[in-house]
Length: 418
Image (cartoon, rainbow, N blue to C red; front, side):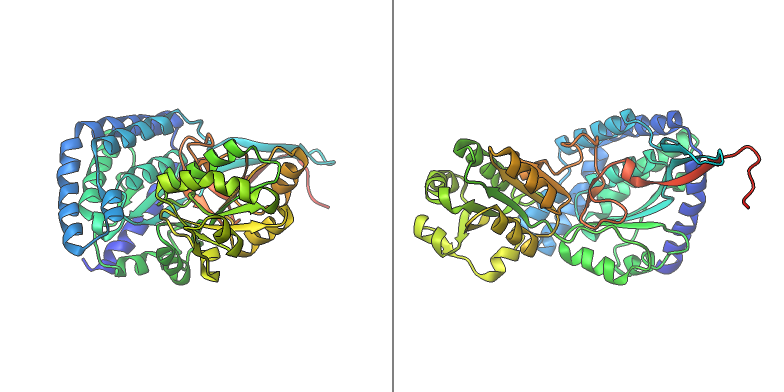
């Protein structure tokens, strides 16, 4: 079969499977998820053997250490995938839930009921664990899903696809409810993005380049998240010790992820005190500072920031720092340079905290907490499919509920429209 015929057949099969999935009971879905968790643990050696093929090829291709790290399936990765599936099985099934009910003057009872989206296509880079995380969440929400992982993870993803197929067959659900694209050629992505007749939503996960490519080439609605230019504003009323901890955790706990801090804004009234207090923690964490002129006068090891630094998503131990006059200036800076991902404030002033929450237009806004909490698991969603920085139809971490939509259900008693 050609690449085109392969993808079209996959899309058609997914559409057929989605009809059966929408009618599937919660008990049956959970049975598959728990079965799959057991199979992943039982087949750990096989998965890691196939993953080793990807790692060898990735090193030959010259992939960066960060990419190799994301690609590696460790024992902890196996454990995490299995535990993630068990957690998803414990989640309340959103399908069929009635979110709102009201009665019209003519006696019609109107409600909104959650239903699956249908067929979801997910395009992502490296990280074979995404194959399982995404499959589990989409499946629990009653959708069929087509997964297109990075070419560098093909062996790993195919191994996982085989295990998923066996779990579906054993429990009597459509084998094509979860499919992994079996080819490396990028042409497969272009063909997938043209299947608007069969696929209802595309979710890209990866770098800005991948996401822009998907948005520019898709005929299917796309939930996007270009980048995470996350900010922390240290207010003049901030507890200095609290602000120090939050700043270091936001930046250094895991700098290569989208919810890591990229720009620190500090109120002028406490700038010298706070930045001097941060000098040693910054050095210990190995953080390079790119600061405004005033910052460079306080932190002598800081490099002068350029305009591009305020827009930057470093995904590294580099932090842009700017001193601002007040919270209004901080909000203006975040609005101008941010990506609607994550913004945080450290303050002991309740009124300023409330105003910050009200005026910041980002997917997650935090008060006195690390930016690293913009994560579905951390926010109690159980797991996430990704973080959306577009507002249709979801904004922020997308959990199981965000993988559904609603339909109107109307009960009458013989009413006719006049």
